[in-house]
Amino acid sequence: MSPWPRSKQTITSPQSSAEDQETRSRDKRRRTRAGPWRTPNIWRQSSVLSFSHRPIMAESSDVEQLLVAFKKFAVHGDTKATGKELNGKNWAKLCKDCKIIDCKNVTATDVDIVFSKVKQRTARVITYEEFERALEELAPKRFKGQSKEEALQSIYKLVEGREPTNVGVTKVSKTAAVDRLTDTARYTGSHKERFDESGRGKGREGREELVENTGYVGAYKNAGTYDAKAKTDK
Image (tube, rainbow, N blue to C red; front, side, top):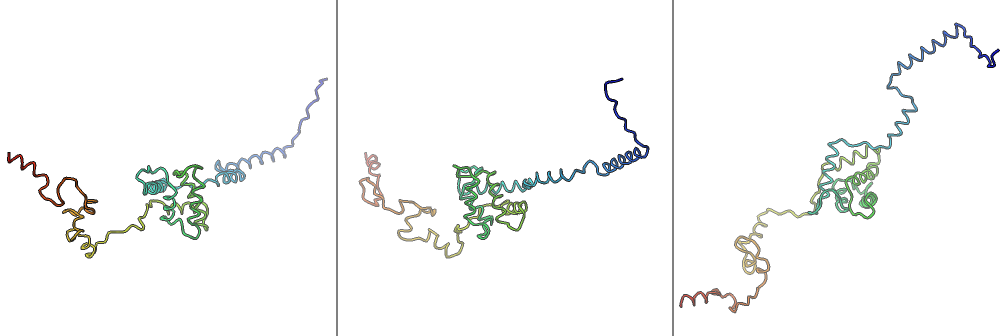
């Protein structure tokens, strides 16, 4: 007699085996209809949550226009600027010229706070990546009725392709009265002595009477001719 217990054999009836086969066939048809692209609800929900925090990136052409605007404002008013960094003054000008500051949802104070938030601790400028983060900070505040992604796209459109405006710069008037007043050929008296024949200013020489220690009296026309005359007489 064997020391090991004899395993029990499961006796299945023909009816139960037919039911199992039908169940397996039904499951197989269900998987075939679902297709490889079908995923469980739990996986789909987790994937949606994992990508929900990522902002929608702008198209390549939009990114280029945004970078162009950044560079134009970065070099504004500074001949030594490289266009890779934006200082606080030009950042505020960008927000004002591009209508990000509307004095209702976004004020100049909000712009300064965001600038201090995204820049490095000891830096006075921001890079292009920090500039993008600053726009992300201002977008929900500027466009309150839109979603975060829609607000970001809206604020991108305000900045794309823009350049600094020269507000407050005095334009040259072309009226006849101004032309008459600025025509140096019509000047008389002491004002006439301040310009040469081409209309170019003489500088200090035209404003002040400079003393020349030559030994000749003022306005003497034959200064410097004595030596030449003495040589010819000899």
